Length: 77
Figure: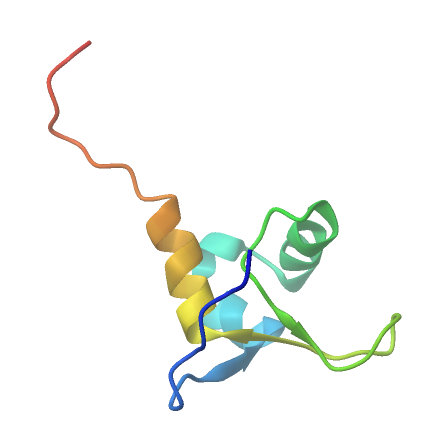
């Protein structure tokens, strides 16, 4: 599935910035583990292998959180 284009003013955040602004992710190692498990937000990697730097678009973080937001107040099953 092709991702939609990000807005031009979409911030790029390092893993450290993501963890600082979104404490739900815990630490940078927790975020790296999510990448490894393919269970985290979409990210950008500047090159292949371990040397590539990783960045996240703010919109990707927000989308990932929105997809996991549970609506409350519904009728009990």
